[in-house]
Image (cartoon, rainbow, N blue to C red; front, side, top):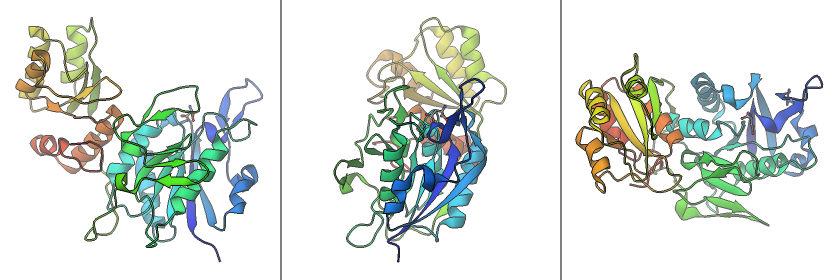
Length: 344
Ligand code: ASP
């Protein structure tokens, strides 16, 4: 008899890549023989099944359609498994984990994203440790038999983070992810230490898992920078088909105070566009009341994104806009904490 069950969902990414003998570039390969690649998994008394996406992709090619497929797959297999581990490239893992956190409502089981910086076939790979610990976390139960971490998470380099708080911060180190505004939910050492007070558990009254797969992707991201031109700002804010813009500002939400810039923001707000202020800083939060340059944005209707990451803000906008055709409704929901993605 096994002590739990997990579905490994392989989407692609470095963890399962091999070198193309022609040019030595890394390409995804069929990972169905995962137990042969990582025999350590056999040591668990667990049922471990796998599902491989077709085609396998480098996560730079991830599109919202894949998030929809993941949400549908998790719903279909939800009752069969204790938890889910999603093997995913690191480049867009924080985007995918953020989006899934919004798409899966009333989640009561762990959905753990992981991957690696070195392919699992390489001697110094970080992939085995990441995968083996993720499987353990996905099937871990507390003393009442409840799943330890019923959240969408990223496990990387010994740390378990809330997925919608993460960002990829290092292209080469094994310590590739950070959750700058929310502490780790667990840390893997000799044993895996969970910080239960940081983990979100569904309310007793929560209904069954509900998935949301209607995503509206008409969002632009404008990173404010010295020298940004009027036409660039105009395209980002007023370009055809744009319903919302994430304005990546300086520091605590400050931006250019010149009339031409504020006038474009005012024009976009006047057209009902959803304008969300996210700081370019890795940590900390937007507060548009501190400086006049932030206040000017608030006065024309820009909404504070608090301490959300850009990845999370994007997933939240896709989800809220997919669910609501009224921009005013989206604006009011944006500043509410829905899945633990913001602190206030
Ligand atoms: N380019 C790869 C990907 O995101 C990088 C990785 O997996 O670490 O799929």
